[in-house]
Image (cartoon, rainbow, N blue to C red):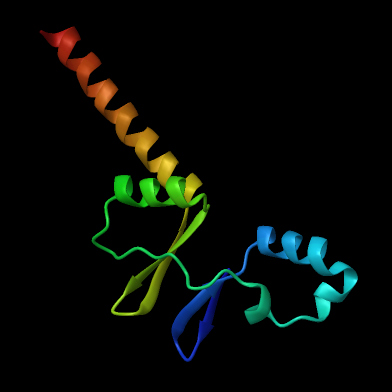
Length: 105
C-alpha cells in the first residue's frame, strides 16, 4: 500500500513490513505508526518507464509493487504479477503471429 502525505508518496507499507515489525516488536507492533515501519523512501517508476525496466528494478530490489509517479503524483500502482502477465500476453501474441505466418507461407 502506498503511504501518501499531502499528495506525495513517502513510502510503501507491505505485508512484509508488517511481518518484520511483528517479529521485531511482537504484539506491540500494532501500536506503532505506519511511518515507523514502512519502507521509505519508495522505489518508483514514471509513466514513460518500460515494462522491462520496471521488472528489472523490481527483480533487483526484490519488491513486488511499484508506484508510478507523474510529476510526483501517484498515477498507478503496479505489481510484478501485472507486469509478468503483460509480458506473457505479448509473447503469446507474437508466437501466434509467427504460427499464422508459417501456416500461410
